[in-house]
Length: 109
Image (cartoon, rainbow, N blue to C red; front, side):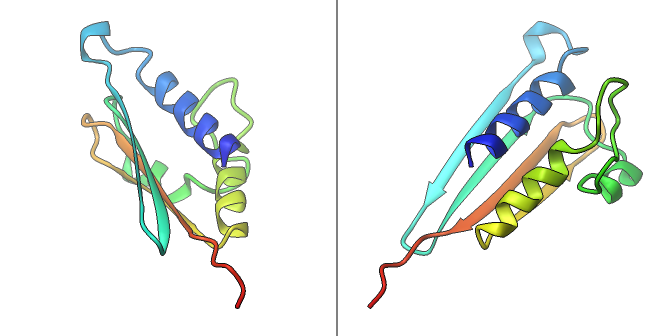
């Protein structure tokens, strides 16, 4: 999970790199109960186009000139391997929110 959070935070920081310093905001929330943990990472970057959102988790898809297009694909693989799910919600010009949910481990018995 550390790799997932690190990748999502770095992506958020990069997304906001062109914005004025006074409007850069990064919000990280975590909520948990006995069933699952939810983590939300929201940035105030430019947001995603509908076309980008469609391909976002595809291997080798990138919007960065220096990107390899593996980060979000790997994040999805890690989250799903733990029985969870990951989504991205965005409005162009209003930032992006990535959310992932991981089920809580239950004790056998």
